[in-house]
Amino acid sequence: MMDSANSINRDTCKACGLCAEVCPMKIMTKDASEGISFRPDRLPLCIKCGQCMAICPTQSFVVNGLSYSKDFFELPDPLSSADMFFNMIATRRAIRNFKDKPVPKALLEKIVQAITFAPPGFTPIKTEITVIQNTEVIRKALPYMIRVYDELLEAMNNPLARFFIRQKVGPAKYKTLKNHVVPLMKSRLPELKLGKEDTITRNAPAMILFHADRNAENHETDIHIALTYGFLAAHALGLGGSAMDLIPPAVQNNQELKRMLSIPVGNHVVASMILGYPKYRYQRGIKRELKSVLWI
Ligand SMILES: Cc1cc2nc3c(=O)[nH]c(=O)nc-3n(C[C@H](O)[C@H](O)[C@H](O)COP(=O)(O)O)c2cc1C
Image (cartoon, rainbow, N blue to C red):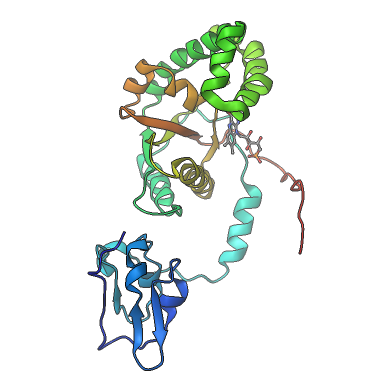
């Protein structure tokens, strides 16, 4: 929330009104005689999104707590960026087969940078990430994840335990557990336990965990958007990755894993992304249709 210490430099402000146009809370108004002014009743609604400062042609508008030099950057030339963007999303795939090659830290840093560009529902940002660049840590974590799924299968065989699981995760997640996770794990756990395959971490050389304070507002939605930025960035950098929904609940439900992966106490692990150099090259894209597109 912004206090009343926001400011407009009246000497440089041209009263173009762009700040008022883009402000999501419509905190500013443009008046022909007075220029830009604030609605005092709306000032406390400011989410410090920075849009007013990002659009101001003369850097006249300052939100309390934000600075032009620290919190903003010059935009790159947008020429042909539409083609680049569509080529990029059309060629992305969920990558689950990786070369036995570590991911350089510089590329992981670029992915982290891309994740910081993901739009939050509102500030302050709640998303926290843990970048696991040490492949050994992932290999060490896998047996613990296998154990969590072993215990889950056992629990799902017990009607009372099933009832409590349903209460804990809610009907939608319970449906995913029952219809997808349990059948998958029933078929894969024997091979996983024998070390013959890795359906959970896919032998990925690197991994990013996305988590947030479990009580933080809007954190799951923010994290899924951040995750999407992450795997698009990985693809743009010549890496491959995939979201992995099997990993977060395993980490969430095992204290040893939470410690091993440095998840702060009280944080909810929402999403994960495995990362590495793709082993195979896809020859064609996959066409998909949305369930419905309605034009009104
Ligand atoms: C939120 C989310 C969770 C996912 N979890 C898993 C997972 O646990 N295991 C897996 O193999 N793939 C997982 N995926 C990858 C999807 O299965 C994949 O995106 C889908 O098959 C479509 O393939 P494409 O990404 O190549 O278009 C996940 C994807 C998303 C977006």
